[in-house]
Image (cartoon, rainbow, N blue to C red):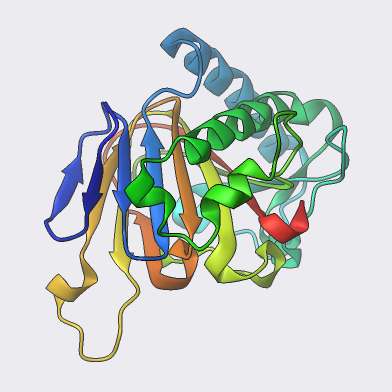
Length: 258
């Protein structure tokens, strides 16, 4: 059952049930433990995508600012056409990641379509108290109409080679996504469960409690949706963990860039 809770009490979610968090008056986060139709489909998706990424790592020259050997994490980004449009990407991705193009996009395009469908359904079905928090978020979902149009136009894939790989505290507030107060990001996790941490963006004089930290265990095949002003007011991270390989593709868009 989906729940909507205020950020007044610590939240540590095991990732086994759906969750909707009203983070503040402008930000909302939704978590679905199973995006795909079955765990076996998530496993086959992971296997196919991991094989593609491993092949590219072995055959495509390292980008100028590749740091995969230092942090056990390799990056890839969608490039070229996805049928109804062209992928956009942050210019710095070209310096640190490898492009996914043509036949190498097969699994990514399948996941992109599923993420779009579920994100649309989830945002349109938010509880009333959550629908009101994000300055037109519900209208943003409803404006997509009954006939789904592609509204994720950017894909970044992080390939975590093992549990030592991590991403430090940050917000996905780059200009290429549009205004930070209206960014929608859908992130799919494949492979092994990993903890996802969330905190309010630190302000001068804040103590640890003021950051209102959260931890959610991202299950294989799960979908995390970050919307509203979450990238303007909150940060997230993926801390190191002792489990094995994880692939975590993230599809990102803002409304104005559809």
